[in-house]
Length: 129
Image (cartoon, rainbow, N blue to C red):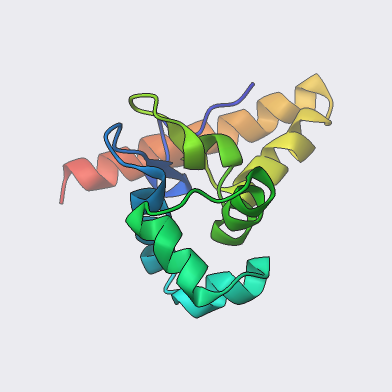
């Protein structure tokens, strides 16, 4: 499996192990510049319900938590996990990884070589800034 988190932090969201479900929802919603109404409309609940989820007054059903995770572009595991240093890989990036894994071994190695070269060049540029 290809792991991008080590090389490309902008593809991942680091979870603070002490964050509650509500805090994660709030943080991700704000990062994506979404309102509580946007999330409520996307999952089919009231804005008040989203507010209560964020405050920790109530916990969303599994089905609603799945919809929230999808709307925010993260996995349900990331959203509800309390593990220290849990990482969430952007869903679009995960889909790309799945497509890469369907390619031949030779094509996968070519892609990895390009990614490695890009990461090396990016790190070099950052070191000289």
